[in-house]
Image (cartoon, rainbow, N blue to C red; front, side, top):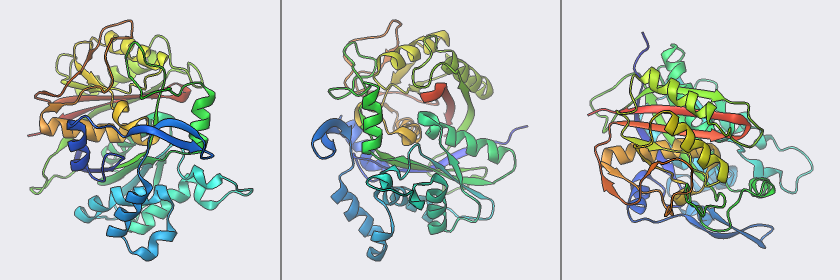
Length: 381
């Protein structure tokens, strides 16, 4: 019999704030981090969701010794800020896992370099963060395109259930870089305006950046302010294309089906879906097909990409955190910039802030290489 696994703490660092409270306030007010920025050679501008570097430095110096400032990259500072509150509230033991989710890590270190800096290796990035906080186990890196953040939760859950660890700190993050922007631009996937997931006039993604962290455990105590059970998870690769999603939604459909089967919940029980919703033509259509195949078309659904952009390896974890906060606040946040349905099958896309009792959450993600993932959370009273 599988042991029950819980998320009891979380934090995030985004363009909308340096903690969950400030992020939630901004979301309720309909604010977005997406804006026009010059991000390539200081002369090509794109709509991205970018953390203000000056504010990041100020925040970092509030909590860390100024002498450490030069020892960490910009992304590493974002990671440290998101993880620090959790480490202070929970013990690290020899049975505690440290799991890092990222797609590109310190890719910016490669700019104007002829050699390969040590910090660009994801394993080195994970070890550096783990050493700073005193983790005793070898770090685990999850880097599987845009499903990485969701899969990192799954890895923690499954390893704890297998008896490898008793608890885990899961951290996810990516930053905006010329490498990432250039890559997506080469696919003609970047929108010319703030993204509009599922909308008739959508024309592509906005890249974003963020870090997020959650604490996952077997054991509950009386001091926990909240708790969510990780009920079920699944990851399926449809092997459709190196960058294009399956037109039939087979991989996402199977992932959702498996996660809900493990969770022992029906379509009628799901109260809210936090979808991937990139605002690309084929991703949004594929999701609509998969959700309808699972008879989830009437469940309230949103995409957070209109607020945060697509944060790559951070998106799945960040959006899971916002979903859990929505459940705690009994409030559904609209899918920003959505106006007119632009997919072939109906979805119940949230258009305005609304009160709701949220117990069961479905979080999905899809990414390059045909990867798809789904996870079901239950809010416990």
